[in-house]
Amino acid sequence: MNRMSDLPKGGSFLFGETRFQDVFTPEDFTLEHKMLYRTAMGFVTDRVLAVMEELEEKRDGLNKQLIQEAGELGLNGLDIPEEYDGLDLDKISTTIVAECIGKGGSFAMTQGGHTGIGSMPIVMFGTHEQKKKYLPGIVSGEKAGAYALTEPGAGSDAMSAKTRADLSPDGKYYLLNGTKQFITNSAFADLFIVYAKIAGDKYTAFIVDADSEGLSLGPEEKKMGIKGSSTRQVILDNVKVPVENILFEIGRGHIVAFNILNLGRYKLAANALGASKHALELAAAYANERKQFGTPIANFGLIKEKLAKMAIKTYVMESMLYRTGGLLDGILHGLDTSGENGGQVAAKGIEEYALECSMNKIFATEAQGYVVDEGVQIHGGYGYCSEYSIERLYRDARIYRIFEGTNEINRTIIPITLLRRADKGDLPLQEAVQKLKEYIAAGGAAREDEAGLIQAAKDMFLLTMAAGLQKYGKNLQKEQEIVGKLADLAIQAFAMESAWLRTQKAVANEGETKAKLKSWMTSAFIYGTIGYLESIAKEILSALAEGQELESLLKDLQAVTQCTLGNTIALHRDIAAAVSEAGKYAV
Image (cartoon, rainbow, N blue to C red):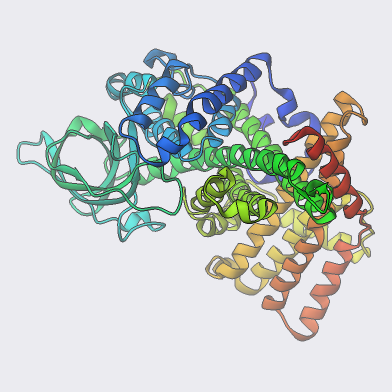
């Protein structure tokens, strides 16, 4: 069992070095992990993709049937304790299944809504009686779960919800009134996690049975993508909810909502990874088969560059994701989650890495958007036609940047949370800034390898954060454009380091020859990212200062960004050759 004191604090990667021995990578999968991967991928390939056209046409009962089939394979109960018929596996196992399900298009939303946000509130915050009543059905798929948070006028600002809950005169139930918007699985859900304000002000979570009198549904939304998932309004008209169906505590529904979103964001990143691998596989196969001017288009330089960058982004998001999964497992293994309140203890532990969950969500969903877009481009005109799967992947991907808190909201979370933790003494921000000042005063030094460039990325974050605090103090959080760019610096530093640590671990364990593709992708990503980060840093500093002050800050920036870059064009060619030979993502 890990001791809490041995684990890195969330966000601490920015303020120190991490040993590659301390990160989890996909190369560390156990035999059980690999078997689970094969099971989940087999289910998606043989059952979900095989009926994708029928799913997209919303064949009645098909989603519920597939959820039940997933239940028969044990794919619904990974996060649920054995006491309630679940498997209670580690978070790496959860990540593996979420990644595989991500290949399944709209079904990823269906199954994720069922096993994630639709049931985890009960797992983490429910009473024993609530868990016993609802969780076995979630595991088997006999009961489908859904999450009803968003309202027509309350999206990112969930706390502005208008749905009310008023206690009945006899004190036995609450009457819920309001409308919930964009609710996944609503057409066939058996239970909803609903958020409402008791007496108009005490924000509270409830478990609401779908067959409750007064609960009705709006028509299916006509969506751009994920057409196979059900998305409707849930209308609550004096719906009676027994008082024993209050989830957690009155007035503390926000605790439930925000903690569930941490894990939801992480799992969504895993879905994005699975979809990206599928898109790359489709693109590589097409590029190998499609001939123009007498040769496969995979032989053309600009197509090689696209395949390489698609593979690089996929490798990086995979490295980030499983590194974070290892952190989540590490903290959970150090907690006693055996009691009735064990779920709350676990939720608090996961909250430690809320920053990393948001970083994964942003990076993975935006990388996914890039990968599917380039996948369409490689297909040319055919990529715009619905008979080619890449067209659906392109449409499906767009919602990922909106789900589970928009990427804009997640960006604001990152620097603000870092500042709050630094103020509490949990992160050594001031010490790191002082150390950077001393480095700059000494003239800096050219960064000549990947490790140096990663440190340069961290230094850019520290330099610009310090400048922001110097000008705005705690009011910096109100400057959203600057906060968003600070978040990008932090995210890319985490991405660069995650890929590099994974590669270093592979080199140590497998040797340089076997790990050469990983090394190529890591170097290409770091070389290709550092200049982008420097431009972001310049933009931030130019918004914070002018004249001699700006000139001084830009000189400081130059001191930390002196570097030597490698030949990314040659690296892209080598990576593309490996992708074309494999016909898919392979490392």
